Every structure is written in C-alpha cells, then in structure tokens.
Image 1: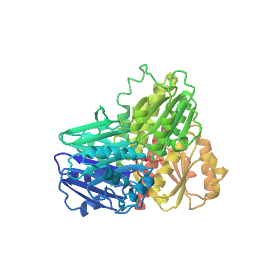
Image 2: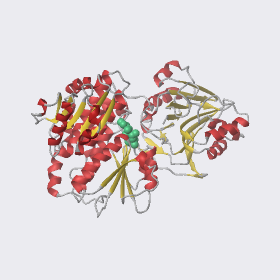
Image 3: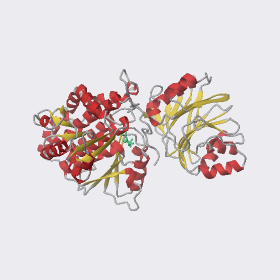
Amino acid sequence: MCGIVGYIGYRQAQPVLLNCLSKLEYRGYDSCGIAVNNGHLRGFKDAVRVEALKAELPSLEGSLGIGHTRWATHGKPTAINAHPHFDCTGKVAVVHNGIISNFEELRLHLLKEGHTFVSDTDTEVIPHLIEKYYQGDPIGAFQTALTRLEGSFAIAVLFEKYDKLLVSRRESPLVVGIGDNETVIASDVPALLEYVDNVIYLEDGDTAVISKDGVLIEQNGAAADRTVHHVNWDRSKVEKNGYDHFLIKEIHEQPDVIKDSLSGFFGSQEEEKDSLIDSNLSGLTMLGCGTSYNACLVGKYIFEELLGIPVRVESASEFMQRGRIISSPVVIGLTQSGETADVLLSLKRLKKPQVKILVITNVPGSTASRIADQVIYTAAGPEMSVAASKSYMAQLIELFKMAFTSKLLDTATRERLLKEFRSLNVIVQRVLETEREIAECANILARSSTAFYVGRGINYPTALEGALKLKEISYIHAEGYAAGELKHGPLALLDEKTPVVALVTPEEVYGSMVSTVKEIKARGSPVIALADERDDSIASIADFVIKLPHTSGIFAPVVNVVALQLLAYYAAKFRGCPIDFPRNLAKSVTVV
Ligand code: F6R
C-alpha cells in the first residue's frame, strides 16, 4: 500500500518524481524518497511527507529516476525503512509496492552469503538478490531475482551506469505512461496525468525495459503486446483548485459526476440491451469493501425492490476467507480503485465458466476490470481524497442505471422514477447549498467522542456510510446501525453525550423512524435528524433538523449521503484533522 513512480525522458527527473509522488500520497505518506541516475546513482529519503522532502533535497541531476511514498507494513515508518533501498555496493536502487512474503527466508540466505542489511523491510532483499545475480547484465539479474520472489509487487529498479529503467509487477498495480520522448511509470494514473495521456496497464508477470527510445514488455521471456489506453480524465481534477481539501472539492463535484454518469443514458435506456440482470436470473451476489461494500448494500435494496431479484451482499475481505464458495450465476464487484486485494482475490475465486462477473470500477484498465467478463466504468474521474465520496455517488448512479434498463422493471415505475433520476444532479446541488447548516450540526459531533447513525430500509446502508466517513476522517468513534436494532443492545450506550444522526426520510419507514427518534430522545441523546423538506413535525422531536430536498424513497441514499459526507467533513475540520490523509489509511488497499 505504497506508491511508486519512475521517470525517463528529457526533463530533470527530480521535480517530475516529486510531483508524481505528491499525487500518490493517498496510497501512503509515512515516508518517501527518490533516487536519480546520472551515470552515478544518488538517493535521498526521509520519514517525512513529500512536501517536506522537497525542501530537504539537494539537487540530484539526471533525467532517469525512481521514487516512493510509503505506508509501512514491514518495519516502522523511519528514514532507514523508507525507499529506495540499495544493495551492498550502492549500485542498485529499488522501489517496491506490495509484500514479499518469503523475505525472511531470502534475507537469511543473503545474510549467510555476506550481504549487509540496513532496514527492517521486506523490500531490501530485492536489491541484494539483484546484486547476487548480477554478472554484467542488468536485465538478466533483475529477471533472475524476480523468480525468487513470492508475494505481491510492483518494482522499479535503477542500475548505476545503466540508462534504462526496469520494472515488473505481480498483483500490485503498475501503469506505464507513454509521452513524447518520455515515459513515466506509477502505481496509479492520477500521478501521471500532468505528463501523459496514454497509458499501458502492465499485466501480472510483465517485466518492462524502459529506455529513452521506448518500452519493451515481456512475459515469460516472450515479447508481450499491451493495449495503449487513452485516458481522458480532466487534469484539473487532480488539483485542489482553491478548496482546502480534496474531499470537500470532490463532495462538491457530485452534481457533475451525476451529470457525467447520465450522459447518453436518456434516450438509450429504452433500447434492447444485453443485460446480465435480465434473462431468468435466479440471484445475484454483490461484493466490495468499505464504502464500495456500502454501495453494494444500497444495490441490494434497489435490485430487490425494483426488480425482485434476490441479492446477497458480501464483504470481500470476509468472502475471500471462506472455505466453500457458493456463487450466484452473476456476481457484481464494486471497487473504485479496481485494485483492492480482497476484492481481486474474491473475484478470482469466483471466476468459473458458469459465473458471469461484472465489475463496476472507476479506473480504466485496473486489475478488477481485467478479471471481469463485463465492466462498467464509473464517471467519477480521479478521486484523490482517501475517503471516498464522489466515487460512491457514481457507483449508486450506475446501480440505478442497471435497474432502470432491466426488462424486469415495470414500465409505470420506470417512467415515474426516471423523471426524478434525470434531475438528481440538481437535487444534490440543493443539498450542497445547505452546507452552512450542516456545518453547524457538525459542531455537535466534533465535540463528542462517539456517535450513532441510524436508518431503516434503504437508508440503513447510508447510516453505515455516514458513520464510516465520520470515523475515518474525524477519528470520532461512530456506529452505523439499523434503527430497529438499537433496542436489542446499543440503546444501553445512549446518553446525553452520545449524539445520534437519524435518517428520517419519508415513505414506508417514516413512522418507525419517528418512533426510534422518540426512543432515543427518552435516553437523553441529542438527535440530528435528516428529514424531508416537507416534514414539519420532526422538528418538535429532534434537536437539530437538516432539511433535504424531497425525493422518492428509493433516491434517499443519494440525497442523504451528501449531507452525511458534509457532516463528517466539517466535524473533522473543526477537530483539525488531516482530512485528505487520515492516519493509518491509504486509498488503495492492495494487501489482504
Ligand atoms: C472509505 C474508503 C474505503 C474504500 C475501500 C474499498 O472512504 O474509501 O473504505 O471504499 O478501501 O476501496 P475500493 O472501492 O477501491 O475497492
């Protein structure tokens, strides 16, 4: 769960590497470092953020280099454990993302052979292995070393007095950006966007030799042809553009995300489509992690309510641990990054001729997209904040689109809902306009050490998502709960110091939510209610009311989640938290 970068071209490598690394800090930011090769190999690293490293760095001349931003897994976040790592001679420099699972065994062998280790990392075995096998042929030494490694990796290597960049990947992501007379490699596309529009997603087991003249990719000793993808992401999306944080910028981008997701949808949804969720489907399994898992839970409600298909939702981190795998004929994997290890392993286990895998992901060419039989790309654009917001919105919109294009939906319901669906961007914009009132409510949360979020039916997953957002960015303990479950235990925790955020939206569950709010008030907890703008009675029961635009119940997740994202953002801001880079978290969780 680190970010790696590399550069070869006509520019000075140092500023390019630092710039790319700053765009990868969402993958980890415990420590960072770079190495530049100018005939002579020089490295510099420290247990600081990229911005601080920039200030510390001497000028390392050269137009070939590698860099790394770390999220510690093996060894503490110290300067010594930061990458690049070197061999005994200082002539081989390596950056690595992933985990070398047999590093202890390799390290013991190498120690016996006289190699000296300076760090506690698994990565350090790589430069020493390369050193061991080096007999004048850098590529041969690199490839032999790779055969000894077990586990997951994306690796970039520099050799002193060698004017090429060597890279390889197995399970961890690695993208090669092809520019005019320059090549930039990185763990993820946003890091490259300033320099290139065309990218190659390396496949598992690929090795690439990158020189000023181009890129040669090999798999099992044979040349491999890989598709060059054009990335049409807007570059301004990887800058904060005047906002204090990426998160608040991305929350505000959601009306546009909805518009982009719906572009071309109206007018085409009546057409006959080859949909995986038509034709006698007996059941559906949906899986994801974290926020994507919560989107799956919303999907369950949408598909069961609108289409009558039984849907099982699995947390991928649990599912991949199962002994016996029982699958539905269609599996939908949701993953913003397309690189979440738990999701990838689950999908790989499920991949069988009789199972169709549909992946909904935000990253073109990501590993999940390549496992899938069918892919839907969300239109969120690059999401830079570690905490997901607009990608969740884009996932919800794609799930609705799937339901609305299914032949299982009756025409009257479709027509009624499509009218609202068309204007969801405007509705979400109106939620954003209540930002100031939401910020005032956030003050109450910011002063608490714990909070509950409760909802029923389709709003239950939103309660989970609201609580997840609050925990991860404000460090306030929060529990998302099905409102009806409160009385089966957690009610014991409620008191005047425990605010409860209640999702009191109209339609079927309204009456039971009002009862829940009364139950909570009887225990003295302050209640922040998210309610429909037409609801005049909830204000007499709840302490604070956030009034939201009216929608049909099925669209409540879209409206409510925006309010909860803002609530979490402002609570975190009042507490002075590093919102875009929550402690201990990284955006792509590429380890299990
Ligand atoms: C929370 C968050 C995480 C991710 C989870 C899955 O804000 O961002 O919980 O949702 O790590 O990531 P993806 O969707 O990339 O598989």
